[in-house]
Image 1 (cartoon, rainbow, N blue to C red):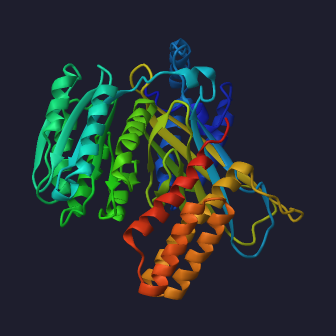
Image 2 (cartoon, helix red, strand yellow):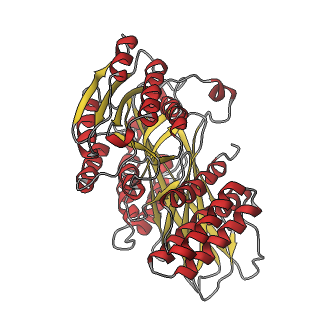
Image 3 (cartoon, one colour):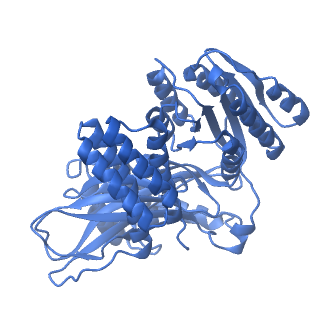
Length: 497
């Protein structure tokens, strides 16, 4: 029997629910999710899971089999992850115009916040591939720091991990074939022989990296490629995206680290977000080692891999946007049936904020906003697929008083506003509206000063002057504001559990 879903939580019924209660609940949920009633892409995915749950619980024999099997499972050393939903408002006034509500979703382990979680040493097994740019522009300090970081990773990985390293310019070669860490000195000697030359063709590096990663690919591993580059690949972006789409189907994720300001951040953001990961902006090559070490440690701390979230707003509710807040903030596509979030760490939240538009002229009373489902592969004691779901409702009340959103939601929204301000400035500049772009950057600087982020505020002012004088943003300044305001959201994802 398939234990990837808990049919009781999927339908939101008690363990002792009667057949009539199960039937009523199924009809209530399926009516909201049915493709004829709900056109959202997330609704179709959830509709299939709800049907699966109903097939189990509506058949007394299958229900008994499920209950007996779960009862006999050894749960002593197993734990699941939890989904917690918070709305920015508990009640809204029935205006005749649409209004916005934010939905904050937090995913965390059952043991999060406990002493056990905080003291837990790394457990996840890594199947890691480093894909290193060795083009001419990487010569000198940049490549030296990347090689030093790779050697630290060799020392940091455990004997149960697998590592492969690819170097590329306009040609790719295997520096280290996918292997366990038996002879670390020999592996580091191979890394030291990497030299810079040639141009930058990322597809060749990623393709060879994928081939190496597949050698020890497994559901009970964190299968991951880390791309480090300082350049802009030409002509093969679409093929790289296609490769990433294939890799995620294989259970492999890709992250990237861009050094300096020549690399294409929009391309690398798209490439990595497909697999639920993200790109990092490294201004100073001297920080490569810290970034890479922190990233690999976070991978090793993985509790569940290949986390996805789907949102099914009800028929008259519109999903406006989605943004991942933690552990690594970045925008999410709202047009996917399932949104990939990467991994869930043992004692850290994965959190997402959704912006929903409610219809005008809602009837007084309680009404459901959306249904959220989260799924992932739990690596604890092997491999186990798990899914959980939850609904959130809101009250519509003529007597509703203005109320502040919960503190965690308010904090996230304030910091998200800063990120959106620099995005709006960039959009205004792309439209040719220099005055609007300048004004937005100056406003961003004011807000950053108010929040005590003086260095980032000074950068915003510098970019406002740059735009006013040249009608352009500097590449370094644009990336600094983009990734700097994203980084501010990190504190919003550390809500106390």
